[in-house]
Length: 111
Picture 1 (cartoon, rainbow, N blue to C red):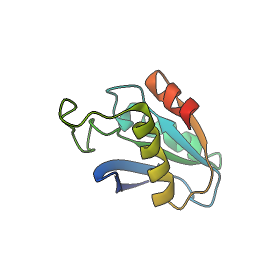
Picture 2: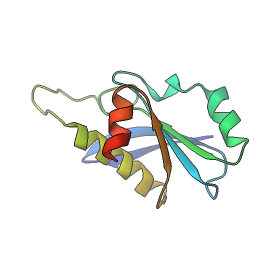
Picture 3: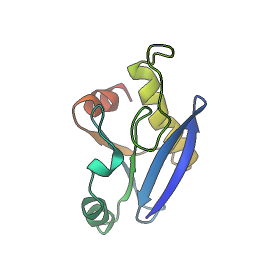
Picture 4: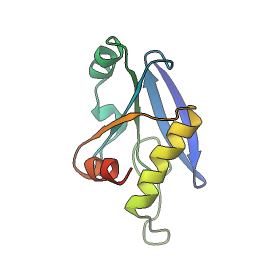
């Protein structure tokens, strides 16, 4: 597992990946206000042990990612989906499986 901070629209997004990056990738997308660590390390490792490259991350405005003054700099669901695309690009991933819950499910649908 390795942490990496990537840039999306001038914001820093904290990410962490598990497993072999040459395997098919899975991005785990949180609900609103949840940090990437919601997807527990053991859970991510177990998926990686089955030949899946797993990525988890903190949405902008949560955890170790850039905190945003939403009143001054509002963002949209499309912006949050673009963050996932920026993560994939930073890792050099052309396609991936995605899984999310709550707001993360909506982000997955937008992707």
